[in-house]
Image 1 (cartoon, rainbow, N blue to C red):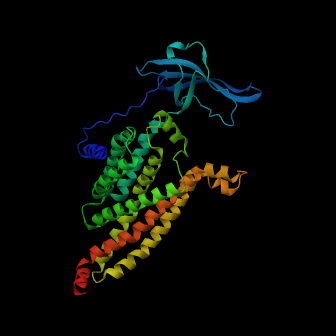
Image 2: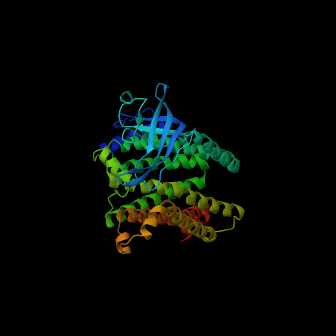
Image 3: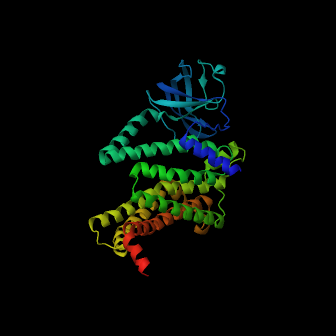
Length: 380
């Protein structure tokens, strides 16, 4: 009954969007404020506990929620570290306070135990980045690009307005992602690629590959005894939500969601290729269609797998460097969950993509040459 209600909530959110799921997330008592560096009063090094500690004494204008601007002097750094981010006049930053502002005097220097600069306020540049991305997509693909952007927006809305709030309400992550995939695959595929035979085949084969990859991911997670706690974020979520979220299920859901984003490429491309071959040469039968399309499909698979390897290596580059200098044996290193988790993720994604190419090509060839295939079946 609970699973049925969850499905109804997701469907209602997808099509009606009136359902607001409120996650019970504890808000921190002392929020983060935006500020601007207006003066670097002092910069250098000092001795702390017998070690050299770089620091900056900064004057900044703090922008509060009521748009009130208050000036403070903040000591940035002042503790032993191998690297200290140095700020300049005019930099927009965020400052996290550990006690109420009413208790802090503007005439005194605020130290690192009272407040801390968490980083740059870079959201100002996101508008330009988004505009550049949209412009490139539309220039390269025309009206199809507009449809794909609408599909992208829809996916973000579903993830941030439905999926994530549901995950915070102690609902099985795998159930949430699976139901989301069932509805989001046809909607985004038809919106991006049109209502045609090519998209029909892509939707069917993507769903089948996703089911197989989910079963494979479940098996590998069980075999390798993964817990989902390889990342610090998983630990923070578990503590914040007091163990209400199934972290292991969240790991599986993340693998499924990541694969969903890559299957679109292979399935739509292979299906489109088959129908294009048939359109250009109507004499091509089922067998020839499959063979010729798979020549391209094999190249597609090879390039995609190589791409995945470099993507995972690029994301995990600092971690890989740590392992290179690790004094422990490789058997120990390869048994660490943070490594095993990425291997499982890469294997599941690769297998899903490899399966998608021949399956989509086979299904598309059957549909494209269905009349001849049907006649042969009837004769036999």
